[in-house]
Every structure is written in C-alpha cells, then in structure tokens.
Amino acid sequence: MTDIKAALRAQHIETPSWAYGNSGTRFKVFAQKGVPRDPYEKLADAAQVHAHTGIAPTVALHIPWDKVDDYADLARHARDLGVGIGAINSNVFQDDDYMLGSVTHPSARVRRKATGHLLECVDIMDATGSDTLKLWFSDGINYPGQDDLRARQDRLAESLAEVYDRLGEGQRFLLEYKLFEPAFYATDVPDWGTAYAHCVKLGPKAQVVVDTGHHAPGTNIEFIVAFLLREGKLGGFDFNSRFYADDDLMVGAADPFQLFRIMFEVVRGGGLEAETGVAFMLDQCHNIEPKIPGQIRSVMNVQEATAKALLVDREALAAAQSEGDVLGANAVFMDAYNTDVRPLLAELREESGLAPDPMAAYATSGYFEKIAAERVGGNQAGWGA
Image (cartoon, rainbow, N blue to C red; front, side):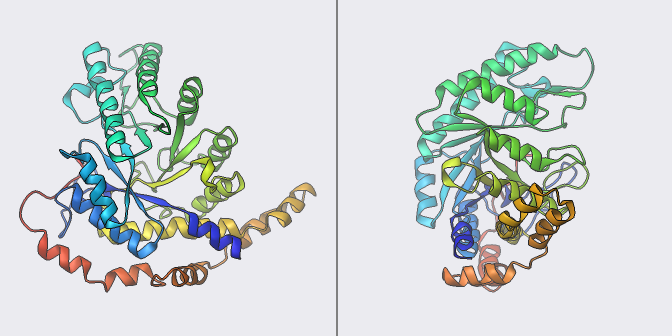
C-alpha cells in the first residue's frame, strides 16, 4: 500500500485554462457567474483545484485565448499562486483564412501564416518555461476530389518539420488526432497511426497525444495506449468523455470502466514513471456544470481510476494469463475495478494536509461567493467560439 500511495502522490494532472471560462458546445454557451475575465483569473481558479486536490499543479494555456502582453509575468503570477504553466495549445482553426485548412491549405500564404503561429507558440514556451507544445489540426476536406489527399500530407509534414526544428532543448510537441469534425469526408490527422507515422519520422521530440473522446464508438483505446507506450511515443492524454460525437464531458463520465482499463495499461507500461514523460491533461468545456467543481471532480475521477489500476494484483494476473485461465484473469482485473478506493484517497489527502473530500471542501471555502461578487462587469473569458 505504501508503494501505491507514493505513486498516487507523484501523479500530476494538468487542467486547461479554457475550462474555467464560459465554454460549451457549438450550439450554445451558457454564461455563469464568477467566471474569469482574463488569463490571470483563470490561473487563480486553477490554483483552487490544486489547493483542494493536491495533484493539479500545472495549467495548460491556449493561444490566442490566453494571449497577454508579458508571458513571463503570467508565469510569475502562476508561481505566486502555487501552480505552473503547462502545455501551450496552438489554435489554427478559428481564423477565416483556415476555412480550407491551415498547414495543409492549398494556399502557401495561409500555410505560412499557420506555421508562423505554431512558431509563435514555441516562443511562448520559451517565455513561460513550458516544455510542451500541443498541436491539433481541424484540417481536412468535406468532399471527394476537393483536394489532393497525398499533397495535404506532404504539406503537413513540411510544417511539422519546421516546428520540430525550432524546438529547444528539453522541449517537445504532442500531435493530436481526431476521427472527424469539422472535416467530414477526410481529416488530415484522423487517427493514432497517422500521428504516430509523422512523429516517428521526425524524431524523439515528437510524440502522440491521445484524446479519449476522439475515437469511433467501440475503439479499444487501451490498446492504442499500450502500443504507443511500448514504442516510447505516448506523450500524454487529453482526458474527457463523450457518448456520441462531442468530447467535452468530464473524464470517466460515460464509461468509468474504460478509464480504468486505460489507466491499467498506463501502469502496466510504466507510464506513471516520470522518465516516460506521459502528461495527464484534461481537455474539457464545462457548459452546464460549475467550472471549478467540474475540474475538481474530473481530477478525482482520474485519480480514482489510477488507484484502481494500481490495485490490480499483477502477479496473480500474470499467473492466470500464463495458465490460460480466462475467467481467473478477468476476475483479478474486475476485483481491482470493483474496489472502493475513496477511503484510500481520503486517507492519502489527510496525510498530505488536505481535506478528505475536495468537493465538499471547495463548496464550503467561500471562493465561489467571492469571485461571483468580484468578477462583475467587463468581458468574461470564453473558449473562443
């Protein structure tokens, strides 16, 4: 149990700045009281999540949603709050120029603009101390014959190579994939295989990020995780959940058993070890649920799935597998999943000087009442839609 607690204490889960602003679906964003008006206030809210959970010490930024004049000052502000700047997320999907794509656009001018933004994000990494650039491209086509599929891959590879060459010592980029949307016929980075192939060609500073909501129904995500870990190409996760096609629900909401299965493969493959560099990041937009509690609950969901994964009796599982004991092996797996780990995690938090129930602690902290009263007037931060 001591080893399990040590692993859980060492786990870090990064929260996204955009989860704290008014955010939601493409159909409607419901405004809430007390949401941040600028990146500085987003960091203050993220610091509350870390204060109550103890394992959310970094915050991902999204450019230009979190654009400021002085990024070094923003990083100092984060440190003063007890958190740090995590991954820098690029945005090459919300400008009118990108209607037909960004780095894969037929126009050289548009491709240059998009790649320039990615290089700007590396500059921001330098200023904030971030070591990770996250790349997601909405690029794709809606109709057969609309553009040359192979040429678009050539354009993508050219841009990725330029960004890769700009990365400094200790920096990397994570290439994200998505099955579809907003492109509906062919997406330029539609699956882990495409992302993996580009990253392998580029080198060790390029890795794949697995967004848990970006797969077709029934996809065995844990297999993808196991494969990428085995190849040293799993850079991290964007944790969220989806039931149909959208992917911004709280992680573990639709299928907590899937989250457990994923985390077991992470544990099995050594992904909790710091040297593997696997980043556990949330990527969620809270539309109807309160912002800060939504993040606290999401962090707790990942932590609970991790604790269950650590409880799997690996020796008993290996023995059953080697004997071909199908039901016995599955029983070992299910015993861990069916264990209530909440008392263990409550004990762990108390040993760390935290309240045993982060949700209850935040609810009684008075922080929401404070920000609801103070953050009036001006433009509330949104997710950029």
